[in-house]
Length: 442
Image (cartoon, rainbow, N blue to C red; front, side):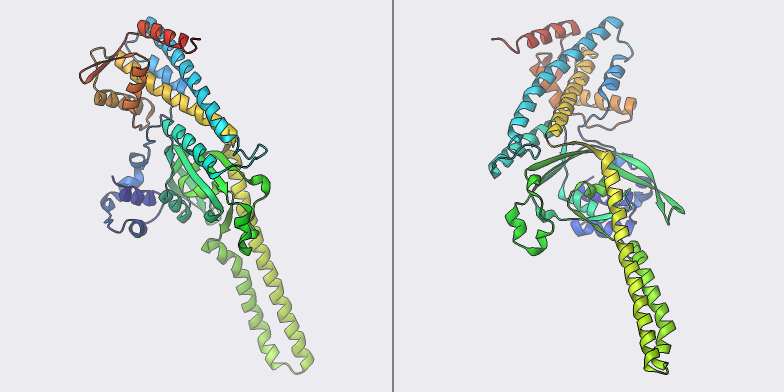
């Protein structure tokens, strides 16, 4: 499935009609011809077939993953203990590697950290840090959120009954990354709770935002910008980590948003004013033009103006209340989605990266160990992916070449033509022990 088809199906699953989805897709992909139109109902009933793929990210908890691996039928107790020790050694080795990685990231981020007394930094400092962090995120199977995905979020809504306008021009640097995604069926309330709708929603399991605001001089260039000028203590490169962000509600993670009133909200706010003015007009205008004296006419006019003023005030109050309700919705949602800010985000990223590296190496080693006659890369890839799907119902594009490379670096792999085998568990433990002992050979 190409990008245009993926985009089209994402709109279908977000609740758009077939025709709306087609028109929206053709704005970005003019040659799109709705090849999936005939299977619309099927994709709406089974969105997991299209969206459960979390890329290379193995979302299964490490403890559950390793426990299930060690429970594979045919592994005796002695080998099971050897496998368990191998897992422990691999975790220790990658934790050591992750420590060095974290030190490098913190050193690069020190000048940019908003939580530290900021010294002068340059665009080169920002570029160097974003390059290093970007590589770490890529190694940890994070994916860059594209502008197309951001545009989709701005045009739609998933869970929250709110749309937000984001002032993107205020950002000097902006990058968003996601790790893992799933599809959930969520009940949406409509018509003040009188009606409910089941909607299948794409959830980004982890999202990192990297934002740097424009400097003070930029805001001072335009009077309209000044009202949104950030405080001096908000300068620097801001890192934010969120969990379980619905794709089409992605704009809620931005700090510089304004509520965009939906048509329903505008009608709800304007209706009392329109209705009040019409009611006053029907009641007082005949009196105003047919009054017997000037005093009577002035009294009627005063009543009309007072009535209109009351409805205008009521409309303004309703508008402010609606905006405040929007802010409460966003604030409450973000309270539960926020995981870390600034420097602690780096520790989280490195920790997740370590887990991914170990999971890949362990999966490759154990399945090769259980097939001592050897497996080709495609065979190993299929074996691991099928086991993950059957055991945990997750769809993962196993990064088999990277996993094989890890075992090769650890000297655990043998290559015979196009097939791979691994050393037996006892020898693997000795090799890993020697590798560990050699980390600091002064």
